Image (cartoon, rainbow, N blue to C red):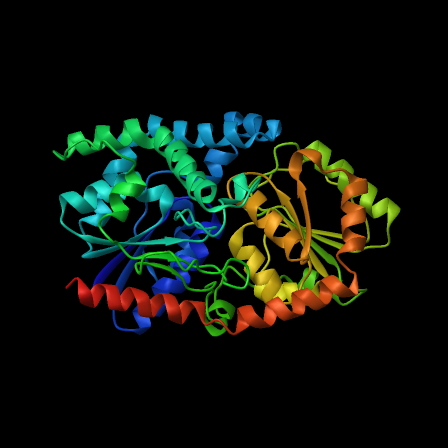
Amino acid sequence: MNIGIFTYGTRGDLQPYVALALGLMDKGHKVTLSATEDFQDFVEGFGVTFLPLWGNAETMMNSSEGQSILQTENSIKLMKYYFKVLHDNREPLRNSYYEAISKVDFIIANLMTLPIVSAIAEKQHKKVALTYFMPPVVPTTEFPLGDFDFFNFPWYNKLTYKIAQSFFWKFIKQDTNEYRKELGLPELKENLVTYLDKQKNLDLYCISQSLIPQPKDWEAHHKITGFINIPKQKRDNHFLDKTPTELSEWLTKGDKPIYIGFGSNGIGNTGKFSKILLEVLAKTNERILFCTGWSVFDNLPTHENLFVTKYVNHESILPLCKLGVFHGGAGTLATMLRHNLPVIIVSFYTDQPTWGKIVERKKLGIHIPVKSMTSDKLISAINEVQAEKIKNNVLAIGQQIRNENGLDNALNEIEQHIKLNR
């Protein structure tokens, strides 16, 4: 089967799809992966065919407008900015999707690509499997959506998902129906997520049931598979994930460090964070490995206990760290727990606060919303997550995650779905 995988967002959104692509290729399928052009080298470094979509995600985040909005630390403003950029550039974006989808027979997509991908798939009569690396948005009576966990009883729980889907539809409705009309498709009168769900498309949540168990009232096409990651051998051979010699030497010169990194989020208020980092170094004896990711700093402190780099190979470096401080992306959370690290989630937006709440509820770490982060809160959290109870909880969850075989589960579900729809 000629399969196209489509994602739009950060490296954390992309990396699990590389694992899916490699797994499908091993099973004899032809696979192309489409994302913004800035990820071409990363994807092709694994030997996966890359077809670019319009845009550069890092440039978008580091534009003057993007940086200004990041400094507000307001998640709603950030989401509005994201959708505004997509709206303003919808013509070249749609064209890039259409060109890529026209070259494949079967589609794997995620939530952010759905408004465009679903329309093209319907026009070209192609089947879609949906994949997510976030807490489920499928209605259930068993628990509410993470952002609405004020109560927990059946009718309220289902309502929370409908509210979230309506909120998402509000952002995408105009552009979705505009493009459907352009393609000669009927206008949607209902929520896109509801419309697609009625088609019983395969709907995979590639997260751990040790953190979010699969509800018993879901229909059969909704599945929680377990976290997925790139197999070690293929990951270690990737040319962009080599550990610099200077970092290897620094790691051997003292105690295990604290890993701090916010990936592709981008820290808008770099001055605030630099001050926090300096105060933590001054008030503790902790060693800190700080990965800047997409953030642009011109004022970071220098200190013998601080090593600064843009990226590291998480699989190689995290086992050498004592705990992780990060934004709460699902992929990084999975890697932290798989390597038995207690976590401190400094959440920015979307699903990150939900993961923060889950981590606290299961006593795997501490959650600090970015707007309320101070050096004292961070130091307190660093001390708290090193308690034996939290370490033991992390060890237990880590073992469960390692035993899940999430990648194999996802691949098997996709292959069965392909066979049913041939």
